Length: 335
Ligand code: ZN
Image (cartoon, rainbow, N blue to C red):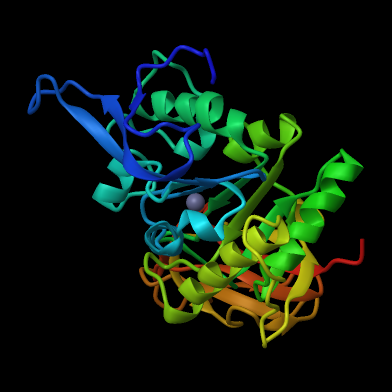
């Protein structure tokens, strides 16, 4: 057990066998609740020997495939089917999920920029600190489920970072192949400071993320990708019996080789996509334009594909601002 100090208490025994459902209690004294607390649901399912897999979702509160799939997984899995230990937090940033916002309404923090957190910090920092020092510390594999939220949408994908450690890279690569999403992506992060991804990778553990969809909702297809992917990962790591089931539609291994894949908007106006998610484009093909609805007769600003590839992500709201991510392109990964 971690001796790291924390202000968060767990109603479950993280080391016990069997299935336990309970809460992490985060003290949160406030104007409308003097001795109040935030209760974050947690499920632990353990049986015999085997790896420990930590599943988290709801780091950003407007992403829904992860919480839906993890609530179902926590309901359905029984210890008799498991070899090892599964820890499930469907709504890790519980206040943000309750308010349907990306950032925490309590302290305004982006949870996935606040790791490894502080035991005596803000609510977000306290949760990050507990997750890192008390849950990640027990885990062999960490799976943090994300989607695009209200402002981005993605081709349903499982994601890993390009890693310096070749052995860790290879083990993670074989896991994202086993997940069985339409796209398995090796991502170059533009800004990885404070991410759960970074602290887990730096600890030498396998870290897997997703971008399952987005637009502030979830679809039957994107939740289905999450459901299958998590069970496939558990089979891949021999926590569940059987072999991973590959998707009928196939899985395309891709990457974002550098920052040039990310297309930011230099304009503010109404966004018109000219290539939909999943479209294959050539360098120079038009992918979108921004209309200046307040300037009659002004030609729209045209955005072209910076490389050959697939439209992997797009801006969702009808209005776009300067600096918003307009689109992300991915190309096939050959190693
Ligand atoms: Zn997210």
